[in-house]
Length: 100
Image (cartoon, rainbow, N blue to C red; front, side):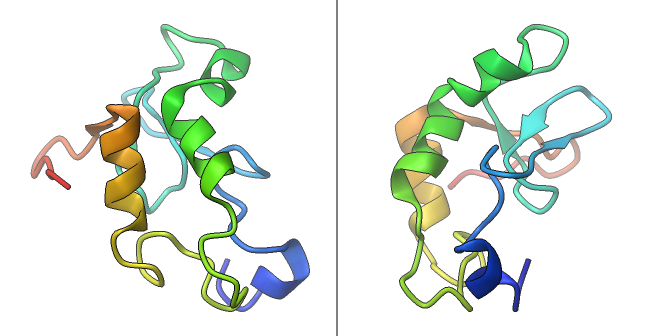
């Protein structure tokens, strides 16, 4: 996470070293990123790593050459929206679904 970027070479999310599975089973790139294109009840973790959203995460790393600013949502405005649109991922926020 923040301030660790230079030690772990940027963002660890998106299956690079970390992912998040919410209570609904949606597999999100990060606990703070509420978008998914896979659900643990329908896909294996390997299939998720090969999904369009997780492929976008790997393809776009690093999100910033300043590794103290690794987050595609907070530190690099527009990067998350770009990946969500290209991957076709959907919002996993059940109360306030977001459009990017």
